[in-house]
Length: 202
Length: 202
Image 1 (tube, each protein chain N blue to C red):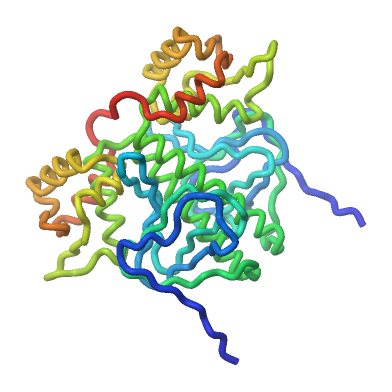
Image 2: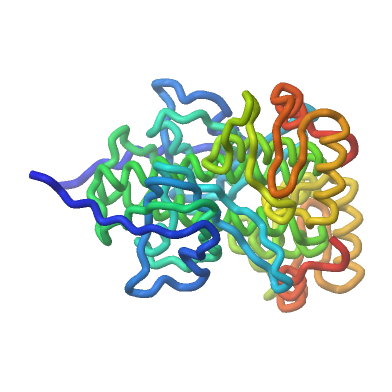
C-alpha cells in the first residue's frame, strides 16, 4: 500500500505563516527540504530570529493546540514542507514532542547567549549555527554562508550598523572573509572558541 | 478501578534535576503543586532563569528522548511532582507537546525581551510573570512577590548590583515597594505599560 504524501513548496523569502490566532485552514508543518526561519519583527521592520527549523524539524504546531502564534515563519531557502494531519498519530506526536524539546534547548542557549555574551561572541555562535543549515555550502574546502548583514543582525538580536562593525572586526582578525551577501568561514576552531566564551565585559 | 498516582515532593531550594545526559533513573515530571525554576548557572555561580514551570506544566522531558539536559531544575517553592511513565500514552504525549509548544512561545518572548528591551522594562515583565506563579500572594489587596535581588537578577539576565539599582528606580517612581526578600506591586497598569514598551536606547 502506498501512502501519498501531501507536500507544499515555498520560494526563498516567502512568508509561510503569520502571527495570530490560527484559523481553521492553518496547519503545522514538517520541513522536508530547505530552511525555515521563525522570527519576530518590530514596528520598524527589524527582524529577530527566534528559531531555525531544519529538515526533519516542525513548526506551526500552535495550529494543533489552538494557541496564538507569535512569530512569522519565512522560507530562508526554497523549501518543501509536509503539512501535518489535524490529529497526528502517537508516533508523529512523539516525534513532535521530541523536536519541541530540542527546540526549547536551543532557545535556552539563545537566552543564555543574549544574557551573558558580547555581540562578537554571539556572532561567532550564529555563524556556526548557520554553517549547519542549508544556507551553507562548501567552496574550495571552506564553509560559505549565504547571509546579509540584516539577516546576521536578526540572528544575534542586533542592528545592521553594529553587525557590520563586528563582521569587519572578525574579518580583520582572520576568522572570516566577508563578501556581498556571503561570509566565508576561515577559522572554524577560532570561531568555536569565541562562541564558547563570554567575551570581555557584560 | 482506582489508579494510584505516584508523587514526589521537594522543599523550596532543592535541586530536582542536574544538567547532563539523563541516566536510567532519570524521569520527566509534571508539576502538581508549587513552582519549578529551570536555570543555567555559570562558573561564578550567577543563575539565569530559562523557564518557570507552574502547576500543570512539565519539565525533564529530555529523559523521554535521551537528550542532554542543559539546565538545573530547582524547587522555587515547596513542590509536589508526578513522575511521567517511560512510555507516555498518546493523551499524555499530546499534553506534553502542547506544554512544550507553550514553553517555546514563552522562550521566544524572553529572547525578544533580551534582544530589544532595556533592563527596567524587562524587570517589569519579570515581576508580572512572577505575579502569576505560586511565589505571589495577596496582602491588603496588593500582589506581593517572594523574591530576592539575586532571584530577580536571574529572572532578567543581569547581576544583583544592577538589579538593586533598577528596583530602587521602580520603587521611587511608585510602581513597587521593595522590602527584605519581597516586592509589593503597587501599580499593575503602569508595570504592564513598561513591560510592553522597549524603553529608551537599545
